[in-house]
Image 1 (tube, helix red, strand yellow):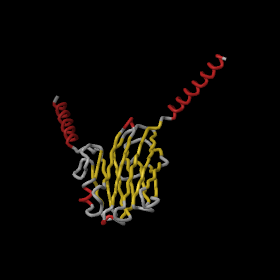
Image 2 (tube, rainbow, N blue to C red):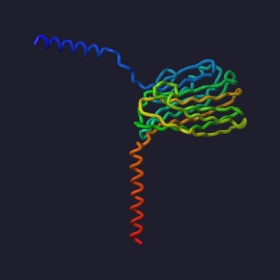
Image 3 (cartoon, rainbow, N blue to C red):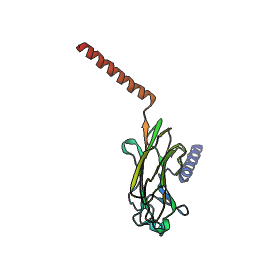
Image 4 (cartoon, rainbow, N blue to C red):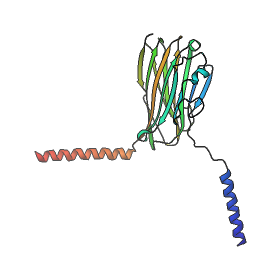
Length: 247
């Protein structure tokens, strides 16, 4: 009985120590990193510079005037949001960069990223992206968007594949272009999604706008696809036989 009491006490102490140990964080982080080529700032969801009070959404608008004084006009803003409609994972971004005198002649990079994404399930996932760009007073400028994932679950990284879409402004007036990446497949595991947009503001009052949508969806298992194909073939044969009988 004495030995049993000692054993129970030892187990209790071990369990208490285990509970006291810090657990690895599985918290999901959504953030935007913005750079003018000289200064770089990171704004995390629900932080002080986040202008959107809702979770899973980051908006940097008035804070841009503090972060980059004299470089962007007051209507400038960048946003990122994350959602899981229908079991998909979707990272959407928008941006309107409108140059003030101090921001003219600079290359701007805006990166939105979220980690600890688990949906959809496997065994195979497909990444696709669409992008829309527009410009004004910004002739000849190329805007590039890169979207992708990372199974190492690292923010701002494209370790599992990426789509790159680049489009050029065709004149000095308002004009726009849209594109879609070729997409790619990747495997199971918790992962991160990242969308990076790079553009140039050629002069004061030059404007670059963008919208990107990055979607991860499940790919049916080969067995399921074969079963669906078999059902389709069987249905076609049945319909063909029925048609022959009616004749």
